[in-house]
Image (cartoon, rainbow, N blue to C red; front, side, top):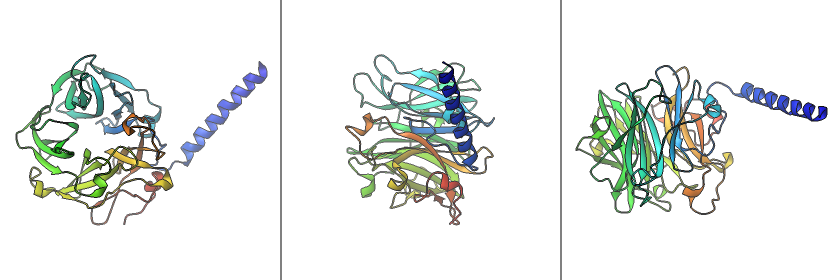
Length: 345
C-alpha cells in the first residue's frame, strides 16, 4: 500500500511538472491546443466583462452547451453547462448544429440549426434567448424559427452590427445542388427584412470537392473592409476556408459589393497534422489587441464511413495576422503557435 501510494504521488507530481512546463513554454497568444476535443463549428464570444464564452456542435448533435473562462486557454479545462436539449418529437429534434452566442440589446441569443425527428435533413435556423447577464445562468426561451425566403436547407446563421444596422448571414440553397451564403438586414434579433441577397456560391474546384458547398460564415470588420470567411467542400480533409470582403461603405445587400479570393486561405497542411480546417469564428486576445481565430480540424486524414459520423473535429485557436495592405494573413504554412511569433508581411 505504501509503495502504491508513493507511485501515485510520483505520477501526480510528474503530471503537475509537465503541466507547469507546458504553461511556461507557451508565449503570449499561444494556445494549449486542442482547446476542446470533439467540438466542431466553434464560436467564441468575449463579454463586456472579459469572460470568454465558447459554444460548438456536440458530436451527438443533440444539445447546446456553453463553456466559460476568463482566458482562451482556460476553455480547455472549463465545464460545459447544457442550456438546451433537442425535442423528442417534431421540429428541433435532430441534427442540432453550429450554435452561435451573441449579446444583442441586453439579451443573449443563440442561433442554431436543427432538423425534425421525421427528417434529419429538413434543416432550418432557430433562436433561443436569455435576459441573464451570464448566459450559463437564467432561463432560455425558444424564439422559434428565423424564417427566410428560400428556407430549403437553412443553417449556419451568424449576425453582426455595421453602422448601426444589424445583419444576418446564413446558408441556404443558392441553386438546387449547392449551398451559398445569403445576407439580409434584421428588423429584430429574430426577424429578417425582405431583401435577401446571395453573396457567394461555389465557383472554384476547391469549393466543390464531393459537394458544392459554401457555409459557416464568420465576420470581421477591420481596415476599412467587412471580411467574411466561409467554409467550402465536404467535411473531410478537403474542407477549407475561403475569403470574401466588401468595402466598409459599400451596400452590403448588393452582390456586386462582394469580392472573393480565387484560392482558399486556410486548408489542410499534413506537416502539422491539420486536416480539413474550417468553420471558424473570431475573437480577441485578453488585452483586446490581437485578433484570434477559433476553428476546428482533425489530426488525421482517413475517415471510415461518412465524415459527419466521425466525431473527431477538435477546436483550436491561433493568432490572425494582417498584411501591410490590410488583408488578413491566415498563416497557412505556420503551426498554430508559430503564428504568435510571425511577423507582418
